[in-house]
Image (cartoon, rainbow over all chains, first blue to last red; front, side, top):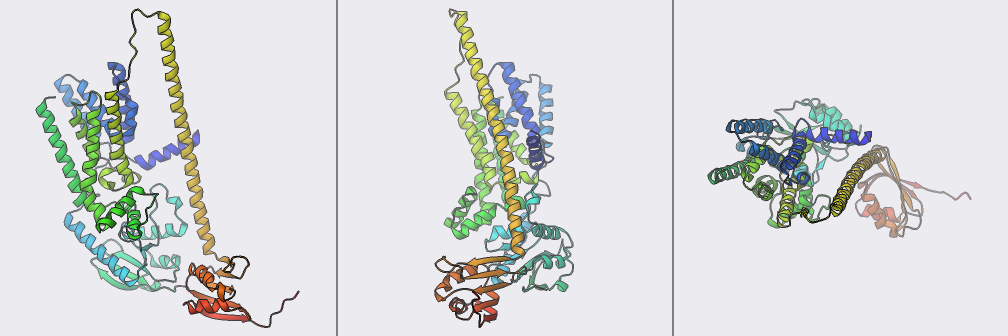
Amino acid sequence: MREIAVYFLDIYERYCGRGKLFPLFLASLIILILIGTGSGRKTYPFLYILSVLTAIAHAFTSVAKRISSKSGKWLAALLIGVTLVLSGSSVWSAAHLETPEKRHEREEDYREIFETILQKDAHAKVIASPDMMPYFGAYSANFDLLYSLPAPGETDLLPEEEHLLYDTFSDKHPDFTTVKRICREEEPFFAVVDKESMWPENIYGSGFDLMTTIGHYDIYICPGGAYE
Amino acid sequence: MSKRTGRILWVLCILLVAAQTVIAAFYTIPHPVALRYLQDAVKTFETGQFQFASPVMSIWGLLCRLFHAVPMTFALKILPFVIIPACYGAYAFAVCMIPDGEKTAPVTLLLIAVLQIFGYQSEAFVPFTLLLGWYTGYALLVHFFLPLLLGVIFVRIKKHPPQTPIPEESAADLEDEDMKHKYLNVRNLAIVLVLFVIAATCALFVLNRKINNLHGATENLQQEIRKKGDVVEFRGALGDTCKGYIIVGSDGGLSVFFGGDEEDGPALLQQLAGYGREVDTWYLKEEEDGAYTYCVEQGISVDHVIRFTGMEEVQ
């Protein structure tokens, strides 16, 4: 029983984070049950398990509908508005949005980087920052990613070496000595560095050569046969 | 609510959905957690193989293959115009079908649209968030199929409303009591069944998690073992006797012991291909180098060849 409770707590922390969607959903179910009991009409609260957002929205609407005074309605609308805004973070925030021009420019740079690497090696092994890594996989299955992104909340499932690479490239100053030590590859591999947000260390001393620069991205190549 | 207010609210809903669609297609930064799912679409697009573990992404991959579209462009720039309105269509259907909810349907839909804007809960929740991961199977399930199912259930309920027993004034008290008991028994049974299903689901979740952890740990262990070196037996073309060994060193270097005759060559080449095309050292018996010659002819490079000569069986 304790294990199940810990498991669900873990799930809750993973998926709900700071959001309030789940408590709101539970509150909505209770509201719908109470409305059903009070009015004597069937409200089918448990069917709303199928759609959490419909449950919350319908519960709020049902409460507002039952308030008769005009000032009460305004107060309810205000409360509902505040609750909705506090239900989670906005996806229309600076963290999730960028101008179409900037997005287009970035996508063009990425496309050129991918094509340049694939021209050099049709089955290229690549490493880049965690922001950029998924783009490689989403562009072509021919890229061999040197580390996968840890699934949120399941970081322990990544092999130790991939974890080290992920940590190294999550840093603003990735140490290429560590990258070289971990990627003891016989075949060449490519490292892409965003010059605006990363200031790598020990690039040339670790045997990496600058292949080319596209936009504000440097592409480095480690020629392979790297056994010391 | 007057008809005019209702119409204004519907128009507001449509405008909000249109704004969400345009912003998703042109302004949203693709989230890395959701973007990872596109890898499956790309695999299907490039190989034509359906990924049964990721059916929705495979469908996107197949559609891209059919229309010669780049999966990333298709998912990020075209799909928002299809999926986001479709999801709101499903929500609109569900809220319109809610018993006694027709009049307040536009308000309910408007609240859903606002909830979607404030829908970011956590990184793990991104694949379920419509405005960040509209192309994932999870978003489609949660925001399209389930609301649609809810709407369908409400339609069924409206068509066949549950019959509540109407007590007849002339009926005997005993019969009423009996009916009440039966009703209570059925209800209790339903509650027990629901509790049982919840308990079984919990147990299944815990078991599933344990198996996943075990699987992950085993994979890591296998990778670690592989990195520390490996010895693989080669059992010849017919697979009946041991004809040699492939030894993979901890540094990735490859050594081959023997290999059999010429007819074993193709089988050995196939097995070797899994480890690379460069062999550091190949140890050969004096009278048995057919497979080695075949592999070299097929492009396997060998740095050192050591022949055991003058060897005699001791017993």
